[in-house]
Structure formats: structure tokens, C-alpha cells
Length: 54
Image (cartoon, rainbow, N blue to C red; front, side):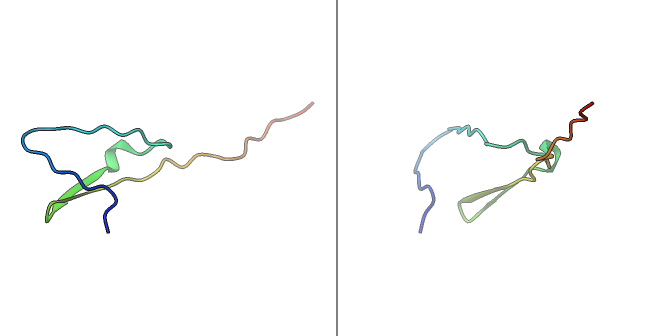
């Protein structure tokens, strides 16, 4: 079972766009047995905005 399987020789890079903001100082990346795992925490956003009506 693979999410993404790629095979490259030499240097390469990949960029991804996340659909939500994340805490940049809490990003962790671990390379183990050829698998890169990236973990991050989403920024908590208020889903409801209160607007005062006069």
C-alpha cells in the first residue's frame, strides 16, 4: 500500500500547498527506512465570528 511511490536518482524537490494554515515552528520531518513522514499542527481558526448589531 502506497500513498505516493517515486524513484529518483540525484537531487530533487517537491512543493505542496496545504489547504489550511499550519504552525511553522511545529513542523517535524522524519526519514526512516526510505519513508519521509512530515507532521504539522493546524492553526486553530475561529469558525464563528460574532458581529454586534445595533
